Image 1 (spheres, rainbow, N blue to C red):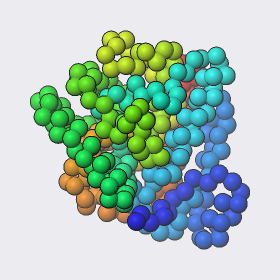
Image 2 (tube, protein in one colour):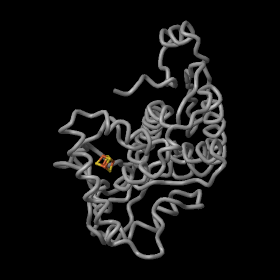
Image 3 (cartoon, rainbow, N blue to C red):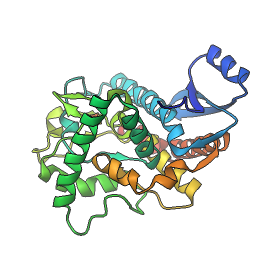
Length: 281
Ligand code: SF4
């Protein structure tokens, strides 16, 4: 059983009232996403929070921003082939998770009913075993000082495609963990032809660069709180990775301070990327 997290993305005035009533602080965030004003309100309770506690809010935020981008692309006549049942982009084992997502994902797997939890763990560990056995000597999957996730993904993409391993949570072209899917999956939008997303096609798909990547923001937040380098954990390797980082999973910070730092990172990213994001739309 997972406790209700102390951090929530609010979407209506009633929710604001309820949050204020229970002593939570509301952090307002005004963003300009591709010329569209986006007003966000995040509620943070006056208590300590683990890194994992920010993830449910971050996932919702990631989906919300991806929907704004999708709307803008369609408004500008761009063809977006992504649809339910097209699982071409899930046909790689390379899905990066931020550290908070790795901790949250593990909590969620542990809280699943026994049969489902076992199936998820088994699928994940089988893929991890193959990846570790085939890993080129120069790759350190779990740690990288690179802050540009896109560069990391491109570097590993060829190797992963060669392994011909799909995401362990892909089942009959559907995501077994759709509600809990990583921000990397929520933020992955392509334009043009879906054919280029297939693992055995040499052409790279036209991936839309998010004006604000919540995956990157979570990575930077973790580095700021822990005074460390930005890290990414590959999805299939999450369970063994978390076992080696249990102390970090339990460390806490004031929830309000955590959200304020996160909001500053999101705002900085939005203004930093605004020109390049508009250029591709
Ligand atoms: S987690 Fe789900 S959406 Fe993400 S790559 Fe795996 S199957 Fe696809």
